[in-house]
Length: 219
Image (cartoon, rainbow, N blue to C red; front, top):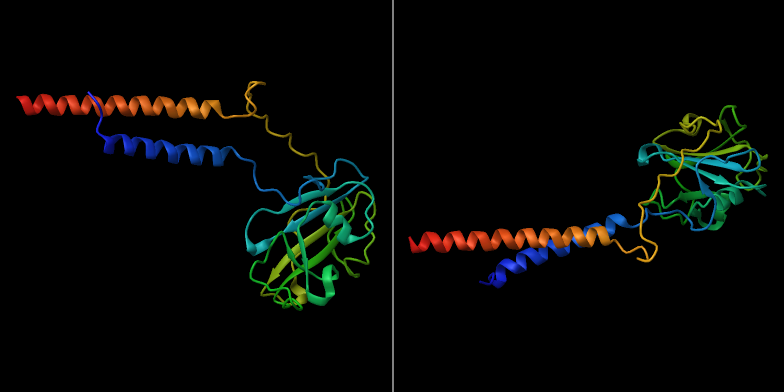
């Protein structure tokens, strides 16, 4: 006895949807600039730790390490792997967007005072200080911190510093990756097997339902 095509269609469509979402979930999280810097605090006093606090733009503060000596504040951000957009003719001397935010600014001219990034510096274990020089004029000492904090609907004198203290900490160990067979090339066989099991169970349920319906019709 065969299962009617419409029933099989529903089963296969559901499995295809599950497969699509399963593969999407297995993919890597979105990164900043590939191949630049490292996530978390610099592990020693030879690099510059960059902290980005999005404030009311939402999301957790971003902490990245620019390893080794840095020429200025911009190179520290770039070497930490941050995606930057400068403000019009000023270029990266005036930062307009960090990691694509705020997304609603055109960056063709000066950002408004009420929606701007503020620049902060600190020694390890010290306190955030509003930088008295531009980001391209700051020469970050080895082991120091560079901070960026978004100010929304605030006057310049009230710009908030980053909420993450400039204290170098040990980074959390990376989560262990899922074990995979060396010969499978990273293909998600567990997901495929799981879908196959779902197909079998769904098909068995449909067949059983049809048999019961036929038995009821005969009686």
